[in-house]
Length: 139
Image 1 (cartoon, helix red, strand yellow):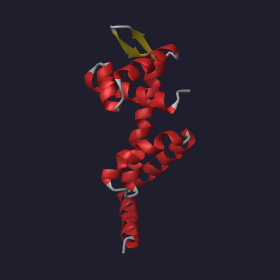
Image 2 (cartoon, rainbow, N blue to C red; image 1 turned 90 degrees about the vertical axis):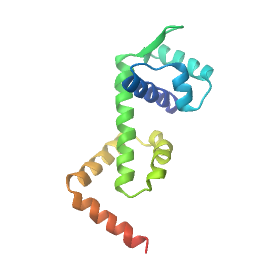
Image 3 (cartoon, rainbow, N blue to C red; image 1 turned 90 degrees about the horizontal axis):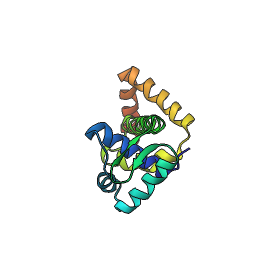
Image 4 (cartoon, rainbow, N blue to C red; image 1 turned 60 degrees about the vertical axis):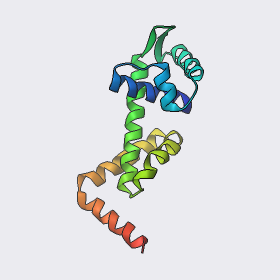
């Protein structure tokens, strides 16, 4: 099982490959606000743990294991963003809050949050009712 730090890298690599078709050390370093040497060390570790295949000076690609984890991590991130939006967290706080909590929840908790998000999305009136509760609390 990857560590939270490894998860951040896998998620970022997955996102870059999905959007740009490739992921470079410099892109990852910029996105995660770390030094390129840190990215290289982590890429080597991810290669050793079979999350990606790395060839020095040639780049890397996610293995099927890495891609599967990447998909799940992106799903988790997007789900938590949806959840926080539904419960009325201010938009400018959502990304930072997701980054703060995503590694601290079990997959069982993530699945239950997924059930709750689905419940609210199935009937817009439920979201409206929740907004009314929030509005009453803010009075």
